[in-house]
Structures are given as C-alpha cells and as structure tokens.
Amino acid sequence: MKKSLLGNAAFAALGLTLVFLPLSGYEEGIVALLCVNCIAAMGVSLLTGFTGIFSLGHAAYMALGAYTAAIMTVRYGIHWLPAIVAGGFIAVLIAWLIGIPTLRLTGDYYAIASIGLGEAIRLILENWQSFTRGARGFPGIDSYTNRTVAVVFFTVLGIAMFNLIHSRLGRELKASRDDRVAASLMGFDTPSSRMKALLISAFYCGISGALLGGYMNFIQPSMFDMMKSTELTAVVVFGGLGSMSGTLLGSAIVTSVMEYFRDISQYRMLIYGCLLVVIMVLRPEGLLGSREIWSFIPALRSGVQRKGRE
Amino acid sequence: MENSRVLLELDGMSMFFGGVQAVRDMSFTITEGELAGIIGPNGAGKTTVFNVISSVYSPTSGSIWFREQDITLLMAYQVNRLGIARTFQNLRLFGRSSALENVMTAMQNRYRYSFRENLWGYLSPSYRPDPAYYYSFAESLLHVGRWSGVEKHIRAKSMELLDRVGLADRAHQAAGTLPYGMQRRLEIARALALDPKLLLLDEPAAGMNPEEVFALNGLITGIHREFKLTTLVIEHHMDVIMEICPHIVCMNFGAKIAEGTPEAIQNDPEVLSAYLGDDEEEEEKKKKEVSA
Image 1: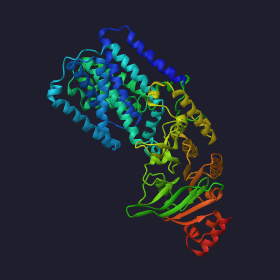
Image 2 (image 1 turned 135 degrees about the horizontal axis):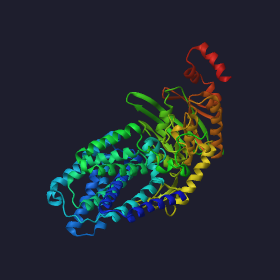
Image 3 (image 1 turned 90 degrees about the vertical axis):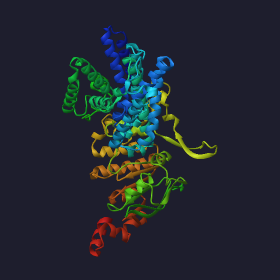
C-alpha cells in the first residue's frame, strides 16, 4: 500500500521534472509529442498487453478524439480543455457501439475486424466533407498542446493507469487474458471485462488524438491510417506485453529514435523496422517482458518472481 | 448428517456433442455438507458432468438445480456467483501472475447470495458483491477510500489460504512455473477463495505420485471439515475416492451405473465389469485386489 503511494509520488515527480526542466523550444516540442504518444500507447497496452486483445485499428479512436476537439474548438469556440475531454468520451462512445458486436470475436478475428473498423472510421472522416473537410485536412487548430498541458495530461492519466492495473480491475483483465474459461468460473463476466478494457483504451487514445491535434495545429485523416494503428501495437509489443512501464519505455525509445533521424526521413521507416527486428531477436518477449521496471531493482522487488526461492 | 437439505440436484441431464452421447440421463442429488465422489473409467463423461454443472456447457436435455434454483440456463459466471467453485483437470491457472495474485483474483470476487429488490420492484433471490471485498472503479483509479483497506484484507486472507494449502513460501512465484502438484493445490486455494457453497474438484490427484496423493487426501478431507464445505470430487483412481468419500456415483459410457457407499460400489457387479472387464476369472482375481 505504501508502494502505491511511492509509485504515484515518483510518477508525479517525473511529471514535475518534465514541466520545469529548462529546455529549448525544439526539445519542448519533443517532450510534448512524447507525452502524447505515451498516452495512446498506455491505452493500447491495457488492451493488448493486459487483456490480450490485439487491435490494429486504434488510430481510429485517436482520429475521433482529434476531430472532436478540433471541431469543438475551431467551429464552436469551446475552450480546449473540455474539448479534449469530450474527444476522449466520443471515442469511448464509438468504441462501445463497435465493441458490442465485435468483442464476441477472439484472437486474430478481432484483430482483423479492428482493421476494418479502423479504416471505416477513417474513410467516414475522409468523405464527410461538409463536417470534417475531408482529405484536405482540418487546419487552424489552436496550439493548445504546449509542454505543460501534454505533461499534465500524461502524468494524470499515467498515475490513473498504474493505479488501475494494481487494483481489482487489473487482476480481472489479466485473468481474462490468461484463461477466459477459468476467469468466467471465478465469477468474472469476461465479455464485460473485455468491454471495460476497450472503453478505457479508447478513452486514452481519444485524449491522445485530441492533444495531437493541438500539437500539430492541423489534422487530416491520413495521419490516422493503418500505419499509425500498427505503430501503436508495435510499440506495446516492443516494450513488452503486460508491462506498462515497458510500454512507456518503448514509446519513448521509438519516438526519440524517429525524431533523431528526422534529417534522413526517407530512411526512418527502415531504421524503425531494424529496431523492431533487433528487439524481436534479442528480447522476444519485448524490452521488459511482462515485468514492470521496478521489479528489476532488487530493493523494490515484490512482484512476480520467475524462479522459486530455493 | 444433521442437515440433510438438498444442495445440488441433477435431473435427467443429458449432454450430446453431435452424435456423441457424452452423458446420458444423469440424475443424482448432493445434500448439504457431504463429501461425494464421481468415479468412472477414462472417457466415462465425468468432466462433462462438471462442465455442465458449472455451465461451461448447457445440457442437451434435463435440468440442474442448486439451492432450489434452476441453474440450467445460467451463464458460467452467474453460476459461480451463486456459490459453485471448481478446479480443472488440465490446470487453468493464470500462469503469468503470482500464486498470491491468483488467489487474490478469485478472492476479490466474493459474492453473497441475497434477496434483493430488482429493477421491476419485486423481490427476487440474487447475488451482490461482498462489501468487505469490494471497492469502486473511481477508488481503483486514485487508490483512495476503501482501496487500501480492502486490498490489505484480500491480501491477508489470500495468504491465509495459501498457507492452508502449504504454498505460503511460494506466494510470489509465477503460477505457471510452480511444480505440478503445487499448481493443483493452488487451484484448490483459488477455488476456496471464492468462499463457495459447493466445491467441485476435477481429478485433483491426476499426475501425482502416491505420497502427494496421500497428502492431497488429507487436504481434501481437512478442507471439507474445516470450511464445512460440500465437496464433489472426480477421480478415476479408485483408491482416492474409496478412502475419502462416503457417497459415490459411478459412471461408465456416459451413464450412471451405480451409486452408494464405497462398500456397495466395490461389490457392484456392473462397476467391477466396467473397471476390470467381463472375463469371469479375471474379475475374481482383480476383485481380491480391489478389496485388499
């Protein structure tokens, strides 16, 4: 119980450091982008790493969040803060509507359905010209996502996520990931557990999308295509399935590497691909496997141990 | 048995998979507080009976009653919430979580059978989460309110159970990496964590050596006594069931062929032929072995 308080404090300290660290304008932008990417990655990690549902369409929820916030702030002049939160909730609403029929599918079947649904949402945004301006994109969004806003959202959502996976819902999701039959015979309504995971992950992605809109000042449907969805899931696998801190680490590494090689942008995807291959060869379970980062520090060790004490 | 209320009743239950008649016209009753066993050769349909009772399958025909309530068409999690817990023949632990987490996962799901008013305003028997083990979503997000108290409570109670089955020193080890016999005991602890009214043990001795089987017998009878728990055990090892269960149902080819006390079962000609084959001489020889 004390460890939870310690963890929350450590996370808050990280947030404060990121807010008050003296940085150049360029670096501030990278920190903001990092936070935005991490928020989306945490959402996908809950779904993929902790509930065992592979999704290849989560960029669609980011798109929903981004467009909701953009339209609310630009067209209706609503303050950016409620607009971002609304972006999250619209994503949740659509995820709920989509989840009712599709969460009956399991494993690969859900992944395939999610590709289709993700693309469908993107195409709707692209073709609903009168409302979203279609493929031309949506310009003129206020740059409300500065470093402080991004870091504060990241810190609050991050603390909430870590608290969540260390509570009854976290155990419920892990149970339905490891063995659905056993989970339902432990009294869990597994379809509803899966739905909860989907809704929370959609909320995180929606918020992340809304922040991305404010960061870029411009959004267009092609930013949220299947490549983006794949990238989200790849980052989670890269960091380790079932490890939230691994996801954050993976997201940080991938974002910085992509940023570092911005000059040779044609080759960025090549480097990205190599990075994934190297990780898959050296650490097939992902960077941290299914352990959290503090379980590597002996003094804080309390989590799952691989080997028995002899 | 001072209290002879019927807890579980199977009434003409049949389960067919296509043309395969896994269980045919099965009927028996389990009274509260008893330790009963189902035996039968491999493939007799014992596990199917368990799967139907715990609603993993819904039966082709017939009905199942638990505490005077028809549970035939309920979902698995609903049946579980009414107070039926089980273990699995082919271990189904949450392999990547620690032993302690496995028990805690079940422990947090304690439900209480109660009469409560439902949406349409009439009273109906139902179940609700046990308040001592429950906290809300907002409390899990912020780790405030009841979170720390309930978590502490669940953790302490789970450690107690692990200690009871002799796994306290392995509490933090990943469940999937435990030795086989320990995984079986962990499954029992996890089922007990739900505080069930009826415990179904599916081949708890499978793959154990004689010493482990002996310890397991002690554990099952001990738990039955301590928790005053109605227990139904499946085994195909005669010696386990004969030793611990006063009430035995014997199955073969999906049908009940005998029911009664161990002595009655041991001397039932149909049981003997199911286990030992029909050959008369052979039967005589093996009969001595069984009774020995």
